[in-house]
Length: 256
Image (tube, rainbow, N blue to C red; front, top):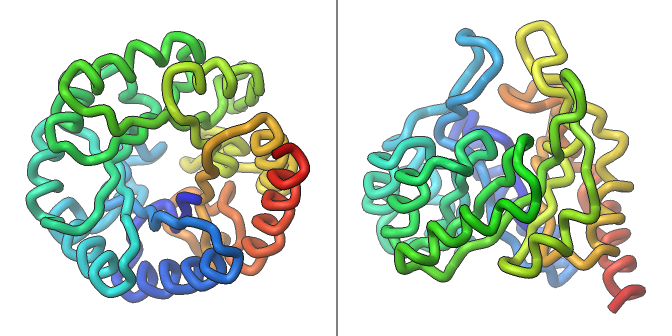
């Protein structure tokens, strides 16, 4: 499981969330990676909160990783940021994530690969599942075999996403696949300067993905989604996380 708030809102909040989710994961014996972004570079509005920035974000992520022993994950947006982030977090376990809108950006993929860190590539809302093999090849041919793909829905008309479950086994032919159960229920830019969401469908979509045989799940989790500074409309409430994960583990056991 990869889980955490969309963006680093503060160090205290990030620590609270990482520790709470880690406790649930440990109880369920579920491997866990903490995620939160230091910068959300593709917000709907220029007035939206983006995060603390690379250096402060890296400091927070490094501190959390050192204190909890967790691997941490964050987005990168430019080739230059990849080496800077890797150097800033130092020797803690870091996974870099390529945002969906940037999954075809060759220079970004190469720069992320060259850090030697594991790379999670979000599938673009506009990309056919089979075509993601080219993004994977860019990473591997740059000397990095540590790459996974993340399904987060495809554009379906305006302000809507749909998940084609056929894409999960297609992509698993050439890389491990993580299913993003929260961005998949997003309604992009459907709010007043923000994106909306349908979080009531998070459990059913993640159950379907686990039944289809994915390698992991990605969930944006927040203790108070109504007050979240990014993507609250499609976040899973922290107090619902354990029951959702218990359902997913039952599905996994049934299809194993």
